[in-house]
Length: 470
Image (cartoon, rainbow, N blue to C red; front, top):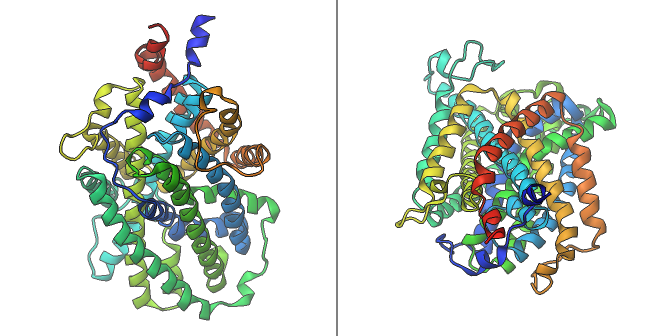
């Protein structure tokens, strides 16, 4: 019985909140908002509207984004309460550790590792496609075997995506310079990216043909829900925002603002772009890696297509930056708890960055980007995200009932408690069930690998379990 109890030992966050972790507190609410927009409005807005419209929802893809935004908004409320109560690195992993115990936290943390890693990989793949389009405009082309991963439908003969590999490694080097410098670069790119998106919407709206909206829902209501499940690929960014809690000047105030504002801004941009995109090009033609640039080429607006491709590259660069950052901070938190080797949370005395895990995370993500096609990677991101959202939503119910946090004055509380957290949990599980069988099989295999690592290393080195027997 004691061994079973050990598996569900809970993290004592009181000491961690009070002591200095070594991470620099340099981020503000504005920085968090730009981080969130940088992560959410990137590859998703330049890729998923086309895929969702062509394969799942048709012109009703805009409703898929509305539904996904609604579910994300509920989850964001729950994240906001947790982040203002427990301002620690690790995001959902840390929150779940405090209310459900170690084994559940490990399962979730391992899921989030896949979310961040595969998100970076899939975005890098699309970044490569857009960048190669720009090179092609100058007549420069890589050898076919270096253009894409094996199995990429649009590039027969691809064996290794060189550009995707290189951009992930470049982002890792940038992160090694420190979070403050990375945040400044991210803010500049976010401003440019939003300007490019607004330019596309402002120009494309004059080419909308009402006939392209018919039939509006060719795949039925089920297609809209399946599209919403895929749209979560676009909304994973605010989880990365919550992972920055230990580096925020005033986390109780700034975390809820950063999470909510980034989601609001991103949702408006997604829905507007998805609406215009299917209005200018028939949805059946949008199953391509770069649908926005494709739509402009379709309209023979080649000069604007080049600007959009550049904006897409800038936008996806911010996603790579923020999601890589979130992944390294998650590994930092798991390692600090003893569930992964301690070397992974050692900080550089100069930049206060976890150097080893930043390099290791970047290397794995780069290899996945180089060898796995985007069609197999994107849904792997969604299932990890939905799983995290579901547990965080349910966790708020247990957080309120936890006597250890009765004295904590959180800056934010989820309204209509406990109904909204429970509704969020149900909707997240419902969208998980909409994902393909392949995604579930891959998820189970990934979890089997994670549980093996926990059994061999994490269980034996857990600091929470060691404190239990002191």
